[in-house]
Amino acid sequence: MQERVLSIQGIKRLPYYLKFLKELKVNGVAYVPASAIADSLNIYEVQVRKDLAAISRQPGKPRVGFTVNALIEDIEHFLGYDNPNSAVLVGAGHLGQALMNYSELENHGLNIAAVFDVSPDLIGKSIRGVQVYALEELVNICRERNIEVGIITTPVGCAQEVCDKLVEGGVKAIWNFAHIYLHVPSRILVQNEDMAVSYALLSNHLANPMQEILTEE
Amino acid sequence: MQERVLSIQGIKRLPYYLKFLKELKVNGVAYVPASAIADSLNIYEVQVRKDLAAISRQPGKPRVGFTVNALIEDIEHFLGYDNPNSAVLVGAGHLGQALMNYSELENHGLNIAAVFDVSPDLIGKSIRGVQVYALEELVNICRERNIEVGIITTPVGCAQEVCDKLVEGGVKAIWNFAHIYLHVPSRILVQNEDMAVSYALLSNHLANPMQEILTEE
Image (cartoon, rainbow over all chains, first blue to last red; front, side, top):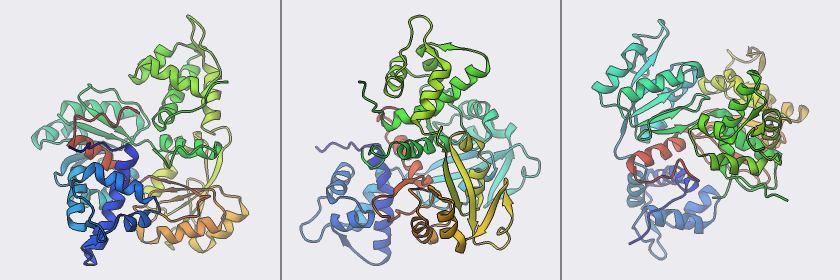
């Protein structure tokens, strides 16, 4: 029985493997050696082998490598892309609209079912085919449609209040883009996507160039 | 001599400590115990002590705790916020404009000196006081102004070409928001901020709720 354990850095590499594998599939390539996957990302082959061993039971075959189709399925299953999550997005400003326009998210198993905003100019309209509702309807719509993920792209001042409504509406996870540490019941998963926090990593690395914290696990 | 080593998760907590400490400072609070910092983020006190020991030589004093001002300085120094980086942003779509509007980045030591786009509607105008230039001027402006960081918020199709120009212009680091694995010389630091990749972490966690990969190091 193999151990299915992968680091955060490893999980972050999977969507890149997937992108490369799907390009191969489109071009009719059936098998791929680990070395070719490694070259496409400019990383070591041993890293690719280790990552793939953690998420796939498929052994690479000598000389031909991995079956492209099976590897695509294994990665999509591990990442939950074969079981799409229904989501709502709250806050249709630039960042919210950037996420709505980002078609990769749909390919990656995120289905945004409704958008919420406070602006009368937006309520009742639709963004990329998804209707914009008033914030007052958030709890009910989350409940009615069994929404699993709430995406917060509001200003920081109302983020906790929006978070509380999402929790009341029954979401399992919150993807938070506001610069605030949200308080939630322990059953709720919060993933913070704060740009200032992300920039902290880059800034720290520029200030301390001898560290190799970003590229390795 | 203490070891100044901190995990990626630890570095990501620092901006939240900083935010809390600055609120205390505004309210005239001079000292703070580690337990109060821990409570504000809903994490363990031992975690806060460990993080702070890695970045500050200031010992917490019994009963009163840490000096707020000194701790703010230590965190800002560790993250390089006291030594702002000059940056350019390429691609003034929704995501690019969201970053331009995000005032926290400036507070966190990122100074966006110029914006680049291909749209004739944008070139020559300014976004939040920063001028938009044609892509053809990218290399020269990066060189003339000693730009250190290039931010890529373009569509995926031109991201590698933009990256090559940034490298030619002499940047040290690239903050990449496009869904592509960029190829750069090894001296260049690339931090990928791909939303599909970030979502992969959340999606994996929803698909495998027994794992605790996201919250702990």
